[in-house]
Structure formats: C-alpha cells, structure tokens
Image 1: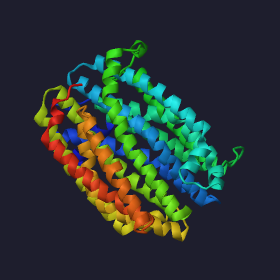
Image 2: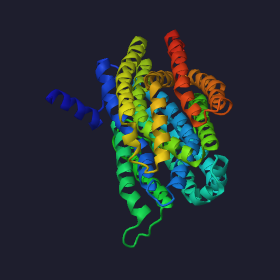
Image 3: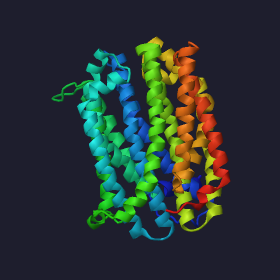
Image 4: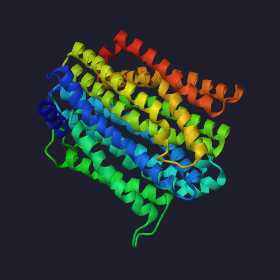
Length: 464
C-alpha cells in the first residue's frame, strides 16, 4: 500500500520525469492519473450547472438551454482542443529533443494565435445568442428564457480556450499535475458560486439560469489565473517570457499546419453532435431534448476521464518521437489502450445497472428520466470501442499527424452517422431512439478504421 501511495503522490505532485526513460507502465500511469482527474473536473462544470438548473421552476427550458449552449460551445471547444493538440505535439517533441526554450517559444505562439481567433468568434456568440438557440431547435419562449445564459457562456469563450490550451502546453511538457490542479481550482470555485448566484444569499440576488453562467465563467477564470502564474512566473520547465509573444512566422506556420486539421477534426465531430441534438429536439420535443442532454452530460462525465487517460498516449508518442524512440512510442499507445478498455468496461457496467439512479440526480420529470436512461443504455453499448478509439486519435495527434483522424472523423460522422441518424429517426419512425442508436454504431466503425491506420505506421514519418 505504501508503494502505491507513493506512486500516486508522485503522479499528483507535478514532479518532473523523463518519460522517454521511465518504464512504459510507469510513464503511462504517471501521466494518466492527473490527466484523468483533470478531464473529470472539466466534465463537472456541465454537471454542476445541470444539477442546479434542473431544480429551477422552468427546469425543462433551463436543462434544454444548458444542453444546447454546450452543443454550440463544442465548436469553441473544438478550436481550443485543436490548438491545444498542436501545443501538446510541438511542446512534447521539443521536450523530447531536450530543448525547453524552443518549447516555451512555441507555446507562446500558440497562445497568441488562439487568442485572436477565439476572441472574434465569441463576439458573434454574444450578439446572436437568442438566434443561435432557435437555430438549434429551441422554441422562441425557451430561447428568450435562456439567451442571457448563452450570451455569457459564448462571451467567455476566450477563457475556455485558454483553459484548454495552457493545459495542453503543460501536458506536452509532461507536467499533467498543473493541468489537473487548474481544473480542480476552477471547479471548486464553480461549485461554491453556483448555488450562491442561482438561488441568492444575503445581499446576492437570485439570478437563476444566468447565475449558473456567471459561476462557471468566474470559476474558469480563476483556473486560468492559476495556469498563467505557472506559465509566466513560476520556475517550471515551460516558462514563457514576454519576448516570446513576438510573432515568429516559422513557428506559427508549424503550429497552424498541425492545428488546422486538428480543429477541423473536432469541428467535424462537434457539428455532428449539434445536428444530432437538433434532430432529437425536432423529432421528440422539449422532454426528449432535455433527456438527451442529461444523458450526454452524464456520458461526458465518464468519457472525459477516459479521454484524459488517452492523452497520455499523445504526450508519450510526441516525446518518444522527439527522442527517436519509435518502438517505445508504439508500445506506449498499446499499453494505454489496455488501461482505457478496463476503465470503459467499468463505466458500461455502471450505466447498465445504475443509469436510472444517476439520471435521478438531475431531473424529477418522469418522461425526461425515461428518455435519458434509455439513451444511456443504448450509448453504453459502444463504450469499449470509444475507449480504444480515443487512444488511437490521440496517438495520431501526438505524432503531429492530425490529418488522419480528421479524414476518419469526416467520413465517420458526416458521411455515415448523420445520414444513419436521419434515416433511423425520420424514415423508420424511431424518433430520438434512432439518434441514440447511430452513436455507438458510428463510434465502433471509426475505432476499427483508426486502429487499422495506426498499425500501418504512417504516423511515424511525420515531422514537427
């Protein structure tokens, strides 16, 4: 027990480790533990909001607004993840080459480019918040009720981007503990502020759904401040100096080369999820939409830790390729697959036997609970494949081969999942259930294709 406790303490401490020299098992777990806890905290944001707004007077409108806004924000998440992916790949490769100064310069350039892009997009979200909700399938009265929530959340996109991006920088450097702690700090603030701002306390007025948006935004902002301290002030392996923000054309070109397909990769997936959300809303109505969004939030709570575990493959592939250890890079990926499959089997069992119980935490409406539980059971069928697929995608991205998973996502989501969901829900009259079925079927297909392409090994030739 003492041995395991010391290992856990080492994983959470942020102690610098040479991941190109440690045993593969140790390297995977030292990175995976804080990365899983980091991603678990990211999913807590949506769950905390969902819990508190689910008990408001207009809970149906509130749950739908939170869910639809998160679906739209997923486009912003895609940009943030795509840029953080580039940051992880470039920083990991430079760290593997034992060149921390160049890693820091690259990190600064990614921050600069990402800030400009996200700021412009967030303005559009603030201006057209109500129209966006209506476009997503919300009724006019529901859109009017939730527009302030959406406006605040879209306006905070720059904060969301920085939270993802800077954590990607630290993950690339192998310092996953700082990334984890920033999410913990942000979530603790959100959990404290949510009931305070939603229900009111003393001189603080009850702001309802708008209070949930403010709490989340303030919480994330506190997390970003913690990140910036470690990135700009603290004595860490990656430390950005002000002069590093001067535009460097060569680094920017390299980053954009990796990030562009990476952004498309996640925009493709996000747009597919947006279409599915709109399809559920139009074929099943308000309760079906609220049930689906509840199921998605629960699913993401468990899938994001698995994504965190798979991020270990991204860092290890990048650093080992930088050290010219190709075999070790591939072995690290397969070891990560093993651990992720074990985790996803456990999650599947939980959803099959405790789905109704978990849904009950977030809504008291019988019809919403039934739809949410049904969605969980159907989507959980493909969880093992989700786990394998995540590792494959992150392995490609860590190598800087962001085009391969982009093409896989384009064919899988747009050419297969969307048509399948449309035909099952509308032409076969299955409604929302048809949408639910399309999800595990598509993820299974994507995983099989990604695994075959990984084994072909073209990713080993990518230069960053």
